[in-house]
Length: 423
Ligand SMILES: Nc1ncnc2c1ncn2[C@@H]1O[C@H](COP(=O)(O)OP(=O)(O)O)[C@@H](O)[C@H]1O
Ligand SMILES: [Mg+2]
Image: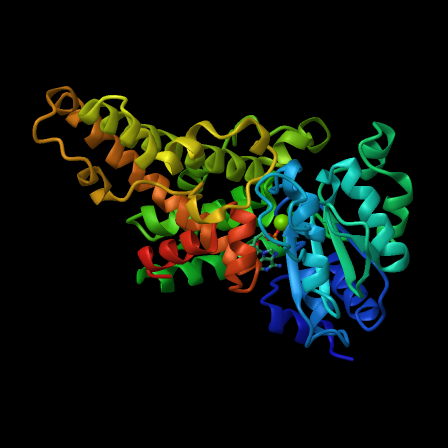
C-alpha cells in the first residue's frame, strides 16, 4: 500500500495536519473496494483530490474518471447529462445520447456538490447505486452500468434532509464511508507551508522573485479565518505575488489583501453557508454574465441587420438561427440539443464588431464609445472565461466533451475557445 506521504507527493497535496493525513489514509484504505464514499468539508478545502486518489488506487484506474459538478448543471438537463436521452425524448433531442453513467461504465464518477441534485435525479441515482440500473430519459429500457461513485458536499446534509431537499436513503447509500477534510483555520500548522508553496509557484509562473513574509505577516495569515480555505489562500498568494513590487511582505500589506480583516468574526458567528460557498457562487455569477454578454452580442447583430435591411422576410430567414437563439421556442425551453448553433459562453471577439458594416449607419456610429468601454470589460471577462474553461478542462482531465457539457457550450465552441486562448 502506498504511504500517505507518497500519495501527497503524487497528487500535489501540501500539509502535515493530522486530520488531513487521516483523510488521505482513509482514501487509500477504501480505494480497492467499491464502497461509496462521501467527501465532506467546506468549499476550498481540497475535496477534489480525494476521488482522484480513490480512482487511481483502485482496480478501475484504467477505466474512465468523470467529475460532474452537480451544482453547475441546470436542473432541466441534469438527468440527460447523467443518464443520457433517447432520440425524440424532448424537443431538440435530435439523436440518442449517452450519459456519464453509460460512458463511465467500469470507471469512477465523482459527483461534486451532490447536495445540489434535484429530487427527481436523486431517485435515479439511488437506483443506480442499488442495482446498477438506469433509464435514459425518454426510454423504458433498463440499462446496466458498473460505476463507482464518490460524492462530495460542502453543505450540511442533515440540514438538507430535514428540509426535504435531500433523500435520507440516498444520503446513507452515498456515505457508507465519509471522509472529512478539515477547514484551513483548523490546520494552522499548514497555512505558512501552503502559502510558501503557492508563492514559489506563482513566482515561477510570473517570472518574478518569490515574495517573503515578515513574522508579523505570517501571524496575520494564521489569525485570519479563511472562510474560502485553501482556494482563498491561493488567490491571496497570487494577488500579492503579482501586485507587490516590494517582495518582502509586511503585516500591513497582508491586511490589505484580507477581506474584513479587522472585523474577522469568531468562527461560530461567521460560519454561514453563503460565506463558505463564495467561490462557486462567484463562478455561477460569471457564467450568468457570459450568458448575458452572448445574448447582448446576438441582439446587437440582429438589431444591426434590422437597421440595415428593415424587418423583411429575408432578414428573418437569414437570421433564423440567431432569432431562435435569442428568443428561443417555448417548447424548447427545457433542453436544446442543436448544439451547433449554440455559443452560450461566447463573448464577442475584438474583431466581431466588424461583422457589421457601419459605414452608412449613423445611428450605430453613436455607439462607438459604448463599444470601446465594452471592449475593456470584455477583456477582464475574457480572463474569467479563460479561468472557467481551464478549470473545467482540468476537472475533466482535458476531455473536451465533458468540459463543454459542464460549461453549457458546444464542443465546437469550446474548441474555438481553446484555440483562441492558445490553451
Ligand atoms: N493540500 C493542498 N495542497 C495544495 N493545494 C491544495 C490543497 N488542497 C487544496 N488545494 C488547492 O486548493 C484549491 C481548491 O481545492 P478543491 O479541491 O477544488 O476544493 P473543494 O473541492 O473542496 O472546494 C485547488 O486549487 C487545489 O489545487
Ligand atoms: Mg470543489
